[in-house]
Length: 499
Image 1 (cartoon, rainbow, N blue to C red):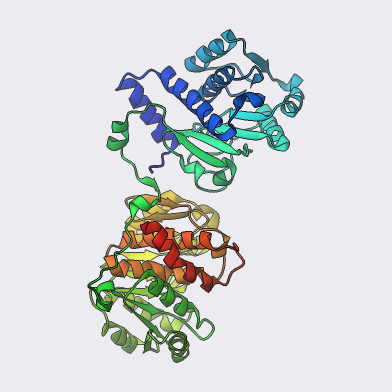
Image 2: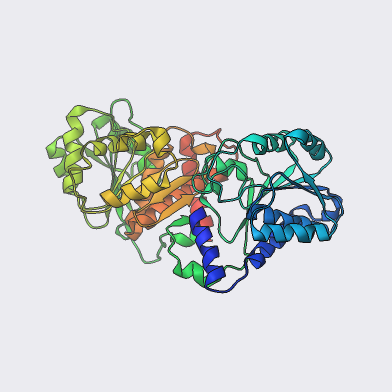
């Protein structure tokens, strides 16, 4: 599913009106009527409730007026509250139509602001049609007071298009914002629905069609996508196959204090279905791994130039390298890590301390193959030499950086952002079961396992991130798990995706 910015949505509507002759009043009518249809499905008997519809002066308010008028067909218990006079022709027209239906209107000002809590106290459902996706400035004054009252009374709240106060393009709160139980958005979801804090304020999201010609979606460029199963393919298991059919993964990592991290990565690759796995590290690291799973092939290295030769001996076109889990930050291995990036001609998945080393020489190397990095916001901030607040959920920066360095970047967070420099994917799977040390190590291995099997780097990244999140959701006791227990749910998650 494509995701649009406020500017892109405005352009689509403009083209529908100007190029296809669709009246803007028809689009507004469809938006309002479709919202009431969603309400019907959510609340069932609409006549059981009383409604308070807050309308802003623009077209979002116009949508609210259509909703209010439609609700009058089910109950007389509908009131429209507005502050400023309506400014668009569409909103003005629907205001007159609503009044012609006998609809009640209440204008709020500083003088009668205390009417708002009284009205809220006597209502069951609040419709938020104050400001929509075009909002770009801080909400303040009487509008901010009304939003605070709505949130305080915690009635069942439905936002039209996007909760008032949430930026459609960044998901940031512009001063204050409505906390909705349900948001009905039109034609396509917006970025602000999926990143935080907007995602937390959106509540349940419903996307409805309002009549934008389908052909516009096909010809208008789109680079933002909600990650669903339709965007990737899980590698098939063949009856006639052997271990070489499913590729191999080499995990380079571990140190005195982190002997388990590379093992988690190797196990992730195995759960993803890879044919052979190697672990390259010091003696303690490889012994620990082989004692846990004898099928792991050990490569004992001391992280010198000779160590690279030991790794290169087992490389072929079906190999994927993971570097970073538990590697530690030691000046003496920096040159070894650099040599890996300079000389290894297979896909490389970089996590944890591997990202730290890569950040030091990223401008010196022209990567021969796609390199994948999987940072959390703190690691990405250091990689970019920026503040965490500057990189967190910065999907534009992720895309620009991926394009600049020939990377696939997965910026891990509650909503994970993935880009190959061309498209941007937003992943929503996962929960707090992944908020544990070691989950990133598993993910790096899972991604490597999928890449090794189908030889498509982006596909492997998307498959790994989606299924890992799904595995976490399948765990019965969210957050009360050993991180390694997620591994047990990966086969179930993969089966669910295939199904």
